[in-house]
Length: 134
Image (tube, rainbow, N blue to C red):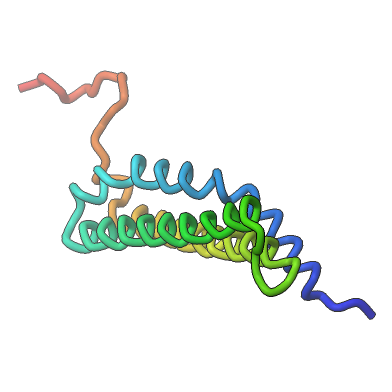
């Protein structure tokens, strides 16, 4: 019976390959979508925004560190003690990307709970019947 560890490593390596590009894009979209509504929310919303910014900066720092090791493997003479060190680095990027997506989902659910649907400004173009009536 084959071990499941190579399957997990190859799967995380493939996710890491896509996570190299997706992590900065998803981080940018998370900050762009939720920074202003969370800043205008309560103290808990501002704290969640600070946690979000710290999470994004930490995830980008981890990715940059691992990506520099991957480039060192590709361009340098020695990569690591084994031949699969580059795959290990890619699997680590995939693992951190999955952790980032899980934390992003939790942050979005908390933000929706903190902000609520009633606190958002009215951006509809429909006229309100009571507006202007005195």
